[in-house]
Amino acid sequence: MKIRTAATAALTLAAALTLAGCAGSTGSGSESMPGMDHGGSSSSTSAADFNGADVMFAQMMIPHHQQAIEMSDMLLAKDGIDEQVIALAEDIKAAQQPEIDQLQEWLDEWGADSGTESMEGMDHGGDMMMSEDDMAALESATGADAARLFLEQMTMHHEGAIEMAQDEVDNGQNPDPVEMAQTIVDTQTAEIAQMQELLGQL
Image (tube, rainbow, N blue to C red):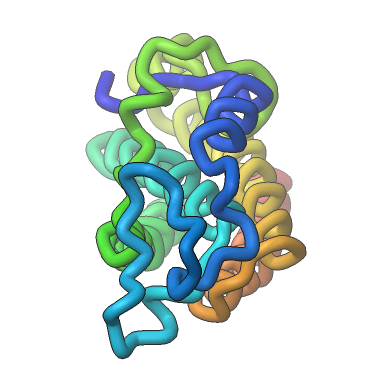
């Protein structure tokens, strides 16, 4: 699998260590951390003005969104799926791929890597991402069972995204990712309500 599960605590610690000294930096000072180009000569305030929370948000949300798209693709490849669930999976793909592209663009501007390497091989607990067993179960499920499992898993997946996004809203510095994070909180909260309603109909 391209997307490996990762321990939230371990990832947070690793990111915190990697990003030590980044918080509060606007890119114009002398405290640029090693390996990071803060764009001090750039005329783009958006590119230069960021902190560790912004970078961590982008690094964690990219693989999280990628897994949501993978889950949606699994569902859309199946027969006998409720049309409303199909529409939801298509909406998730349509919303999250552009966000992945934007998040990667920000990381490039900030001189940070995508963070996916640090997630490889890490055992992830909790509800942030689906495990390999979860993904295998979804891939093998059929019909109404697949639709139900997709809705249950995506609800937990969205809850993880909302938690990460809320952390960015509370602690981020760059207004652009903070705005995206708030959009994720609002959109995915509404989608969770929609998925709960759909589960009641299946």
